[in-house]
Length: 189
Ligand SMILES: Cc1cc2nc3c(=O)[nH]c(=O)nc-3n(C[C@H](O)[C@H](O)[C@H](O)COP(=O)(O)O)c2cc1C
Picture 1 (cartoon, rainbow, N blue to C red):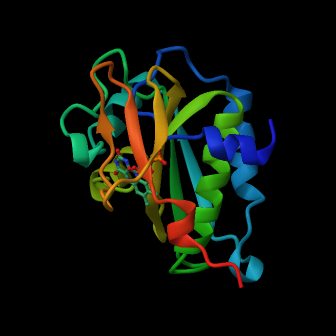
Picture 2 (spheres, protein in one colour):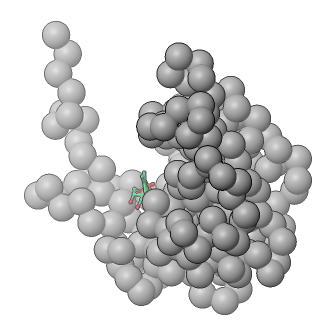
């Protein structure tokens, strides 16, 4: 699949089949993150991959899902993520690593999409509790969590109407995500 096709196809997925993700696909995602652009090439990011069944449930409890359609966007039993990648910043290398993290995370999301794995980038996390669960070493901070699994939900981009940014769920459980029109966001000079 071309990178552009993966970009077009990728939508946030919040319901997953319970088929485990193959280890080599998880390694591939971390390798994609490793090779992302990095300011001054400092590469301050580290990763924890969680697939252990007991830990999955503990991590799940620290995450918040789909505020615009709560509680309907939260995965139920049998729909929960089968893996998480916790993205960490090594603050001894760099304190503010938002740009690096975003580039690395997008590489992870697109690599997953390429393997037909659905992802949800989660910023709304109880970082203190999660740090204890995944045993974050001193000097490292949790940036974000990426929840993932094989897809059990449809989601598509739609054209935004009247500036309404809120995604919604239809009667079949599919998500529709308004995106701004090209003509509203670009000027070619
Ligand atoms: C920085 C960031 C934080 C996010 N945090 C959450 C979150 O905590 N929970 C959630 O369900 N989705 C979260 N999302 C997913 C967004 O809701 C989603 O990307 C957005 O609605 C656009 O949908 P799309 O990814 O399908 O294009 C986050 C996305 C980003 C980029």
